[in-house]
Amino acid sequence: MATLILVRHGRSTANTAGVLAGWTPGVALDERGAVQAAALPGRLAGVELAAVVTSPLQRCLETLQPLLDQRPGLALHTDERIGECHYGAWSGRKLAELAEEPLMEIVQRHPSAAAFPGGESMRAMQARAVDAVRDWNARIEQEHGEDAVYLMCSHGDIIKSLVADALGMHLDLFQRLHVEPCSVTAIRYTRVRPFLLRLGDTGDLEMLKPRKPQEEGADGTAVVGGGAGAP
Image 1 (cartoon, one colour):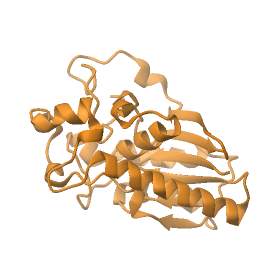
Image 2 (tube, rainbow, N blue to C red):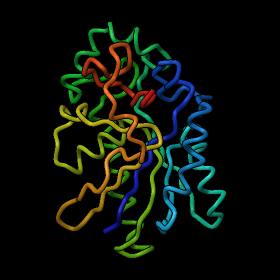
Image 3 (cartoon, helix red, strand yellow):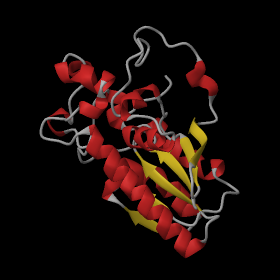
Image 4 (cartoon, rainbow, N blue to C red):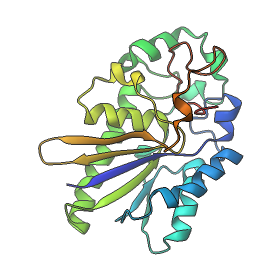
């Protein structure tokens, strides 16, 4: 079956502002995110891609643009099923403020039971994303052969939930995973099992430095939506 390269969008204005963007329109890449996106074609040089599938949200489309500019014949498809989690009433709010909500403890410790007010459950988020990958795996293999490689540009929680599925990991453990902005995660699917080949690879070891107490994730709390990445 196909090999899937998952790319989280580059750092966005919402990431920088500490806001949970969700499906809020107009969230673009910030200056650093644009630099990350510009570097993506070089990081993928030598990897032949059968197709690209993307979340319809602006920050993902902007992340892919430099790659598409360098590969003008590359097919681009949009799939809402790999769009960001529908955070409902949480969308557009500051993460520091949301940390005080009782629901946040469920999101952190028991995400399979978490449902966002006016939005969707994290279980439903994972299910739609997994369904999308299964469908695209079959389509890519049928159209391009079982050795084909394709790319999806999506969001932090979506990518973490897909990795959890590939590892046979319960959704309640997926907050132990972390993917940086514009990081590359790769999963090779076979008839009997998936293989995780890369997880959150940026080629930058800055993120391995100890976090200062005031920085996101320093206290062991997972950043909902994925966070802004290494300082």
